[in-house]
Length: 97
Ligand SMILES: [Zn+2]
Image (cartoon, rainbow, N blue to C red):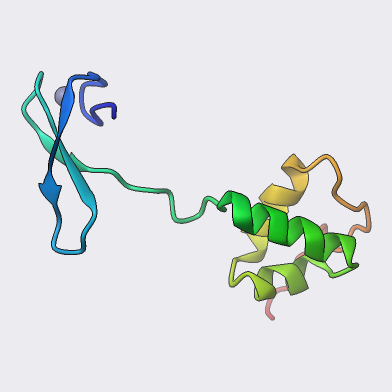
C-alpha cells in the first residue's frame, strides 16, 4: 500500500475506521490514511455485466439504469471497450431522463 502523501511504500496497517475500512499509517511521513476506492470506477463484475447487456442490445442509458450508474460512467466504459457497439446512442446525451 502506497502512502497517499509521500508515495512511500513503507506503510503499515493501522486499524479500521468506524465504517470498517482499512486504515494505513506511513512510516516515513507518519500520516494515517484510508484506502479509498474510486466510487466512479466500475468493478470487473460491473464491466462484465455492462458488456453482456450491450451484447443483448440495450442502449447506454438502459445499461446505466440497470447498473445504477451515471450515463457518463457507462460512456467512459464504452469508449474504453473495444467491443462496444457503434450505435451512436450515447453521442447525444438528453438534457434529462
Ligand atoms: Zn507518507
